[in-house]
Length: 344
Image (cartoon, rainbow, N blue to C red; front, side, top):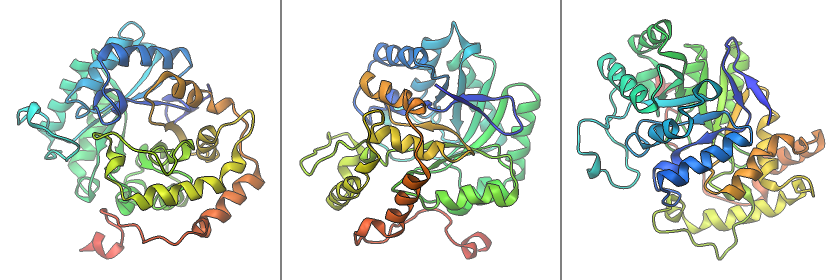
């Protein structure tokens, strides 16, 4: 494993991190807490020190899993968690599927949410505290950003950031967090197949000379870049990929076949997808979807796999620029995608 330190900070994270949405939500297959703890221990043994949770993942379950796994080595791991969804006002058992709960970013709620996260994590501080799926209203909320600075001064958080989503999009939410707030950490979707709006958000940090470091989620484009899907692939009933159009699967398979040149005896396609991201110096950590021990070992060893050469990077760029020769419907986005929408 290799490690990177966030700009202008003392927060060092493993280049491959572990997102606990796969162990706590049931969206990637059901796991017991014992299963989760065993997988987290395996990750730690492989050098992974960065773990990304959220209070809403399993209604606190992801944070509780971290406490069970690492309460005896808290000083050797880095915890990120998220806030903003109200998991307290309604019966948590009434939640079904992946629909969004109401959000609350008021100062009183954020303080309560942090105290509850600290309790579940069994710790006195969160290393990186993130607005969960922030909208433009949160990016523009001076009181919210001031509160995060207060929490940092109080020692309850070491850093803060913004996690964008849930789906791809949210262009100017990210750009403005960088340009107007010098946001220390931005979590975005970005990968070889899905580069917009991530490309623009990366460029924004360079243009603004910001201190922003990036966490990358969905680095394998919902598993496509692991290279295992076929036309016969069927996803489980509770798997979010089951609800995508079949064209996503068939077009993706065609794209993957054109990326097979990245595979080598000492580098899988899944590792190449991570190396493509790590070629960007502002990427601090990559958060693949990990749901079994075999996959964990493959991804954890990605930083030791050969880096992509300049020629390989250029060839990937050319393929993307021509959409791999495939005609597709334009993507739809839910976030703020034009400056007119920002000023409206």
